[in-house]
Image 1 (cartoon, one colour):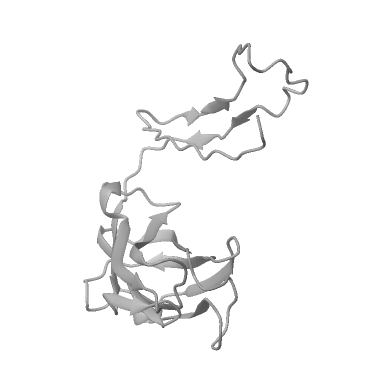
Image 2 (cartoon, rainbow, N blue to C red):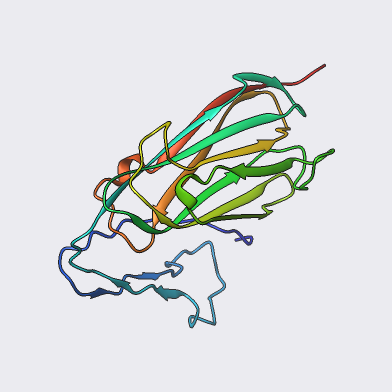
Length: 206
C-alpha cells in the first residue's frame, strides 16, 4: 500500500461531569494480498482527553457568510463577508473562527498576483480580535481569527464581521466556501448553526 493520509472525525457527547479519554487505534487487518507486517505499533493510537463539565453559562454561536460575486472569472477578486453572531444568553469566551480558503490561484498573500489578498474586520464594542493566515497546500490559505470574548449581539447591528478577499483559480464550476466559529471555553447549546457557507460559480476564460 502506498503512503496516504486519511482524515477521520467523530462526535463525543458528554453525559456527565467527568474526564473522557476517547482513543483511536489504527491497525492493518489480516490481508493475504499484503505480505509485509507493520513493525512499529507504538504510534498507532491517540488519546485526546476531554473534560465534561456542568456549565451554568452558554452561548449560541451562529455564522452567516456571503459572497459578493455569484459568478466570477478565475483570477478575479472574490469578497466574503463572515458575520459571527452570539445569540446568548451569555458572552462566549475564546471564540475561534476558521476558514480554509481552497483552490486559489496560488497560496501567496498580498495585494498583487496573490491568491489571498487579506482580511479586515469590524470590532464593535471594543471586541479584541486578531487574525492570521498560513499556506495550505499549493493553492490555499488557512485563516484563523481569535475573539477573546464575544458578547451577546444582534445580527447586522453590533456583531463582528470579517471581510476576506481572495482570487479563486483552477477549473470552472460551482464552489462553496465554508467558515465556522466555536468557543473553546463556553458551552454552545446548538452546534448545528456554527458553519456559514457561501456558494458561487467560477468561470474560466478560453
